[in-house]
Length: 388
Image (cartoon, rainbow, N blue to C red; front, top):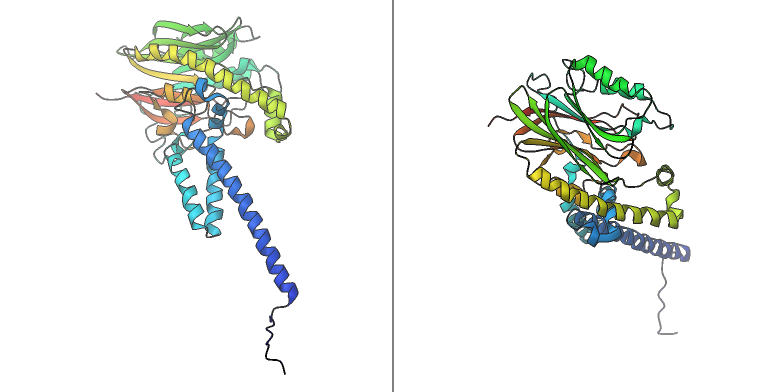
């Protein structure tokens, strides 16, 4: 009789192999998810830096800031998965990456329970900014009449006055058939209206309408590389304000680019993707040169002032950071919901802004999603002059 003993497993051989397979599969999922999380986290960190590093230094990484909301959500979802998997150390590291994003959250999404609380204030006035895209619609046809009808009824805050008190339009095509209808309908609302133009190109202008007298005006031209206009208005014969109407240099994103991005086919077209990145980088640098000139005029303004327009840049950008120096963002203060203003590409971009200086108080903000004429949404803010 042998003294050697043999030990046998009670588990069937098939069950042992299946457990090994599950462990192997789980390890693969862990590695893949970890790699994805690291990639998203690094991209999100880069987006945190884009407002503070000039595109001249940051190069093609400038484009990452445009995707900040998507990156934040992606990292947040990854965090939830790590928590469900009880991977506490990884989850803790991911949570730390998300913390800085909380300070930028209101630039993209806002909850405002007091919105519209004082909309019938008789001393309030409304400023509208709208890139009208030469009066073209999504199907490539011009519908000046539809644009004119909206502009003449563009005050979303009160029925007391149909149109916004100050209307700042970008890409206003002065050679469009029937464009005089815009003037006639606005004059039908206010009886007397003051109008100023600054040329962007041969037949395209920045146009500002005001129901208040315009006592001075001027422009900062980028020679087809961005244009700014300013007008000094007198409200109620006693309060002087300066309104800046801006159209910064384009992102150069074509209709085909938008289609490819929206359909996801851009991921399989490396040449087009690199072309977009190169254009965004180059045009961001162009915008900075314009903004530097504009800031000098803004900083020298002796009056309360409002800065509006199509910036062609997202909140996580160097342009936005420079423009909001000593200025407040009306959406951040009074907006509600997700702050999109550009309709294409799933509508995640906010590139149209209304900024304001001390001495003014916003009581409402609106980006009208029901107006589907231009590729931009019209944005409006209702202000009162703050008591000193």
